[in-house]
Image (cartoon, rainbow, N blue to C red; front, side, top):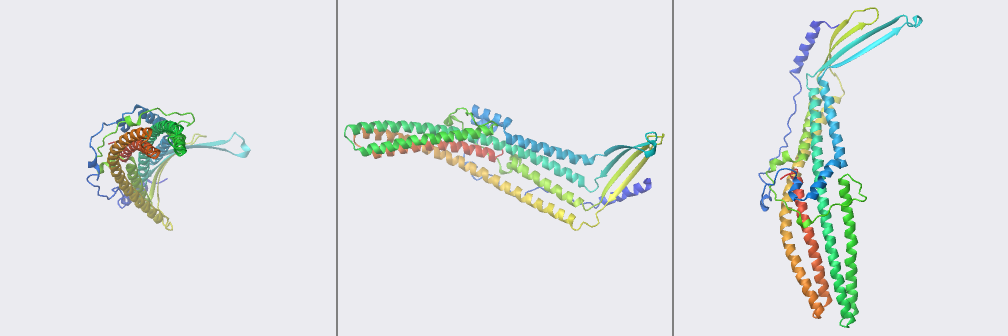
Length: 449
């Protein structure tokens, strides 16, 4: 049994050692001077949108329903939640080091020749507690807490990715359906022109060359339709998987791409990104975990101390209780460079996490400015493409009239038809690009602006 004076002396010595414990690393600053504003923030209308779900700004009930379903059933999100639970359990394990550990045991024995008549039995109850004089347990807890934070921020980033993927796939689906309608309208125009060509050929006004040329144009118009139908199927099946459904038999809701609202943007200040983008907050949490691992590696150079207490009793023969107190100190004298290597490894990983944090900030700043510029550019582009489409329709009507009258050749008419078809397709693509740019800006700003 350890005498009280010896136990007190041991505790005093440990306390003295604590005054020269390892210096804790707590710096998580990226060392980057953030700009005062985004380069292209002034090129678009600045209007703060309502707080809440960012996809509500598109004013599309179908999109809102799809995102709600994806958040409830997406399997990637379910996997992420399991990772969060695992990190929460790891933190619980780290916190257990700050509580005493208790155990109980019983034993019984008998001489071989005495049978069960001479049984000796005893019991013991013991408790132990590890003193965290040099912060090893605290560092492990800090690392586990940072790991949990990183897992939560990672889950938020996953949610934002799923939300933006649903919106992008749905709008791409609506655009492809609209392009399919344009292709079918173009097929109707080709069929009408073919009838005109056939009538003029039967009348002997033109040669068979025009008939063959228009027949080829008609075949090309028909060939576009199955290609677009296949693209519709591709977007629908991708959307089904995002919603946590089997792709077979799934049909996405209808919608009019050109009627989807285009949100205005107010990107805020670049410094806001550090508190808005979950991937940046995850990178910062990983850096905190790396700092905590350095503290744990430094603490390993110092002694570990344990306190213990126990009660023992002989259960047979009416024996008395016997109590005991204990204290122990353990110090690594020679590790062959193992402890030094662990510290160097932790410091190197910390530098790696710091570089990753900086790189994430640079990428986030770029994402915002690129999205802002894209929004402005696509808005200007769509305005010009609308003018081009309307003008192409007027030119097509005029070319058809002139061909009927015999004052123009088929080549001019087919060229006008192709120009109108391309212009109509470009208008649909331009609207999709504007919506996609808005989604990208939401994602770049962490799901709000």
